Image (cartoon, rainbow, N blue to C red; front, side, top):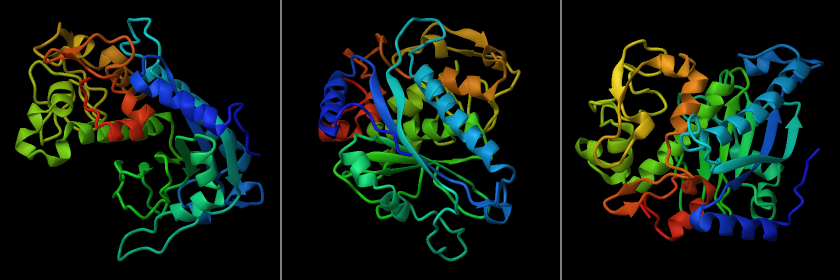
Length: 341
């Protein structure tokens, strides 16, 4: 059954606008969850999912627990250097409603040799996403499903100003409303780490877009504020700076390849004192800093993002709270925000 929030859509919109004006206090991301569990009796129909089976009750309980865990982890990740400060989170996540269907994900026809993709338009119509987004202030739709023999987009944005997401950016695969919303599609055969990675990649796409990477020649990427100075990378996507900077989703400061989050190799890095100009205080670090745990690495990296309580400046101006772009993408586009105030 759908759950609703105490505020009206108008009240929630006013609050969101006020918070996002400077994001000087914690903003709330409103989430609606939709789940597809194709069932045969009390069991998941693996002839449909192809990669996940077992008890419907167990899988349902797993997704509900993961939804709660992801919201908590994302909030914790938005606490700037929260491993050593008392800074508040820049974002809170609140699940305002959820619905589930004991049936297969609706698909649209495959194109060529591609795997069929979910029919996101049909799904949005079925859950009345227009009402959720425009009247109830929903910012994100978290969709639980399977991968099997179908494709999916880890994140998929619908916006009046265009799609900036970890997808093929098809402008027609989601209905466009007056407010931006983002659909995150999770595979319930996986876990919390992969959920966080969906959000991290989306954040990277937003920041790269704002920072101009899409229109910058690849041989100049190392000069960009986010990708070059914060991540410490270039067109290779590897960490190329010495000392190492903060890394990105697939690469920790000491990584030598994608997903290399448990590497025992030591490097000098200023991730815990990163500055956009010059180099902060460095320390010798390897994956023991995050217990060689991929989930802890993800939260640790998110906490490097400039958020509430940061005092970072660049070329004489304060950096913006970078979580502002998640909190209010529409305002960011309208006012042409950059990574610097």
